[in-house]
Length: 293
Length: 293
Image (cartoon, rainbow over all chains, first blue to last red; front, top):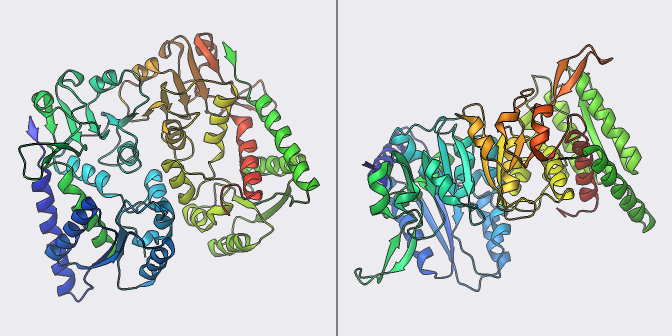
């Protein structure tokens, strides 16, 4: 069994990006610039955005954080989005989700210029991904594919079972892995809450992407020997062993499943560290105008 | 075994649409207007476009056919697309594919205003479909879902095996059937040229959507009793029994498979007749601004 070390891969990619930024600056190019809009003071969102800003600094990106209070209006936010769309210095930007209930997330997402949509949530990016065209792929699916790639895990002709059909993980990762590409060329099955006898699908899988948000869902008797398991679950569960009072739990019963795996991601330290770095990779691509002019 | 009669369903929907157009006109509304751009003289394209224009007439739609010779430039075509985008009288329009090789189909598709993209090929429509938002769904997948609906075929919790991963059938029908919707809520497996042991997947399926373009691919020993089979194949094969010298062949060995099915579509007369009527349904929705303002 080989542990997939997302932290190490993320660190590796980080140094690759930082090196590329240095090269860009040496040759007189423009420093990539990521902006983030944060509305309100949700604890998780504060942490994520702070981490994104810090990573920008480490990579040599410029970053701009734009904050609004919870009572910001939808119009204020949309006006800011349009302003960022039109600001030639901003290469890409994100609006940290979730937003307060009185603001339509979908409207905000669709107002972002898809050429600056480094989160990959705009329908143009989602649609181009489904068709197999170059686009900004959202961070978690992109991170999963990068892990498969860097660990040279064969995907062509393999049966990949995706557990979960969320718009941000299950559906896009299924879409990516069925493409005529590498990684890709998988036979893909998408299972979800309405699937009957989900164990049977899992037992037949060569690769399982677990993204249900159900702690410890995948048990040892649900997988076969030699399976590759990517655990996308990150549910906070109470714990008296950590200072914060909680710990992150994946969708996989790691101790029971790991011994049967050829490769498995831990939680934390697997897919998690890949998400921010995937966003940074998209920002670099945006800065280089590598996907859209 | 019940035969799914696409011709009868299409006729039924046709009369429903015609009735709705009459109501719209009676209440002083605007007659739906579909435009079609046809470049060159490809035999298949001529037939399809003629059939679309004729169906418009039968339904009480206005239609406009715009023709170009094979040597039309990409710019001419793109200019016309922009003109149609801006013409308030045109509710929806299509550019008949394939286009001559010197014109980028993708560029043309992405230039169409997605709010008039009644073919549902624009990334905004593809992307919104994947996310489960209202959009123009392309004709063949929409027609397949309509058949499942009108024959009251239970899909929730069923295992649907999609054979083929094309952008116009396999991928979108898989995407639609995995949504939290009705029809939908299927466990979906997408098989394709790189799938190993495709027979095993077929034998486990409750519903098979065959869209490989491989005549007679699905044999009697590859399906289980009670399966629902939707045959999307329409390959022209030579025949000395028809005037035209060819006949249409589906992806299913009908005589061998049909006796084991609960429901099956014939070729011709199954999915085929549903495609044009699905385009007309989209045009009606565009005219009513039922999806986009």
